[in-house]
Image 1: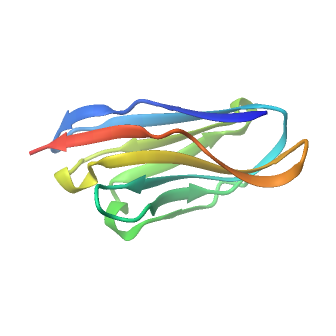
Image 2: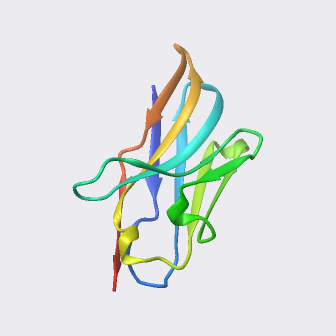
Image 3: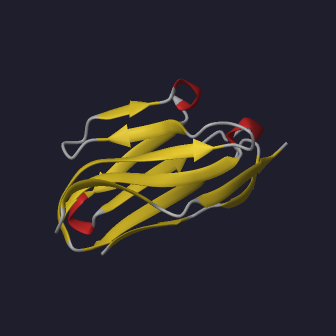
Length: 119
């Protein structure tokens, strides 16, 4: 059984920073892409940032230059450093990973962590 567990969410003022972490645990053979998505109230889930096993990254347009994704392959962990936060960044943030477990390659999701940015 594989689990993705996020941490680091909370309430922050506009202009502030937060760092999210997501640890993948369980019967994992290897992990390909890891990423962060977010879903604001009344909106669809959207890509925030994604990173390959080799370290290549891509970002959603609204967070470019403010957010940085990174990963520690030895710890099966992905991070999201969020700077210059804006009220429109308020959402539930979900960790995502494409990984090879005992049943083959599958996409897993974390349970989500809330971020609220106050103006």
